Image (cartoon, rainbow, N blue to C red; front, side, top):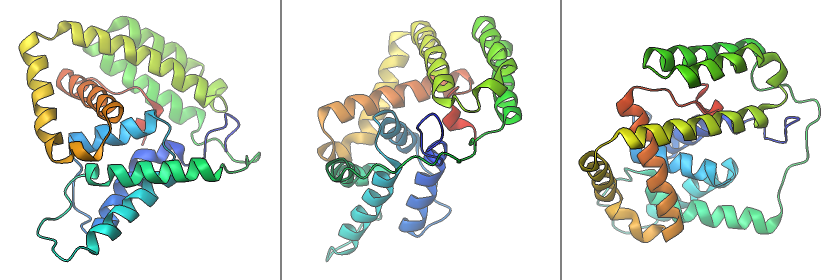
Length: 227
């Protein structure tokens, strides 16, 4: 763990899941879809341990390979949703939390944090979002003080991003909002039976927010995107 209590590889969550899925699927060039990225983000935000996600992917593919008939390739992380949550429950019941590693170095240097925050500030400012850009620049100037307080910095960035989500949502007309939700429904249809209503609701939220940022050409602010 870092001093903030987060695992050292926690900020590699997206990359670790992407690379593991590609490796287990056996096709390194396979690109994750917007739905897949939203699903990873929903797991991350729900506190699903990275270990549970990786084990769940393994378990889902092992079950798939045992089928007598495999007419279709696994083309989405949603195929692994049930197995991931089963592994998360198993880990929680087993109480497998790792002991803290007091000497673990910070995942990012002050220079890396400052560069990331300044870069996002510049993109927001060029898109007309001067106020959040100014906030990011203040955080960038204080980057050295956040290297061992990453959880606090992440909370500040999450609050700032939530304000941006509200602004972007308000700027969309009803027809575009409907189209985004219809796109999600179409992509999710084959996998709905693998997820509970709360899981689907969280996934819909993450997918919706991701699309808003993509269409507006704005960066995501979370440290999980510092890759």
